[in-house]
Image 1 (cartoon, one colour):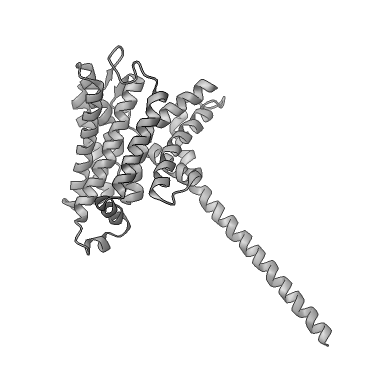
Image 2 (cartoon, rainbow, N blue to C red; image 1 turned 135 degrees about the vertical axis):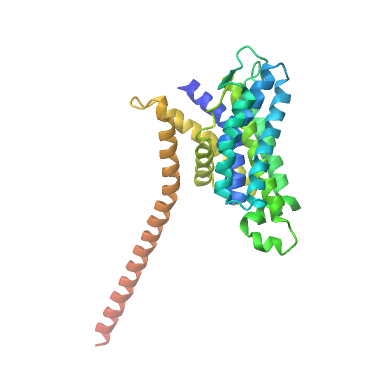
Length: 306
């Protein structure tokens, strides 16, 4: 049980970069970016191919980050300059990346068994908390700069920020590029953690990223940028722990992972609505009781006067 929880925590930390990337597009930019399923695989493919050809795993990871940013930039250009719907531009790029990733790998999967990897001699639990915290703090600092504020304003009210002379096309492209760069970084780390990269490893990643964001916000809140990004990181860890616990249920198999993910997302989305409904119902009940008491007092007062 303890080993299962430690493994889930390790995966949660590795997937935290992807969750932060999804947070940028879906929460900050309010952009439905489906490039994630493709750029995640791109990161794993670039890192695996470079490492298998003898390059440093650190250099391969940075190259994966750059590859993901390039993919995100293409999606941004399709949307802003090509005037293609945001959802459709992400889908188009995701489809294109499937073939691109196969070109990069040259075959459906690449094994990294025996290769020099980042986690070859280092326990992820000893390194990743500090790396994730550093990236999270750098992201917080960036979102407080003038450019970061313009990025946040683009998602809140693009027309308003354009009136101040900000080029929202550039901020949108930047945001989507950063998002997919973080997603590809996660893919590169996961490929090294699992010692292989596969052309289908990115299927469903957008749902996992959304689950991490939604669970984190539901449990830890999102009142400020610092709190929101921290909630996303913790949400990624909580999600992996919940999945690990769910897979320990006797009648669930590893093949049910996507179903479990979908159920978790549904519960995380529905739960706040149920909370609001119960709260409103409770307030309405108290108000009804107060009105009934006031009416009863008025009736008694009238009877005494008579």
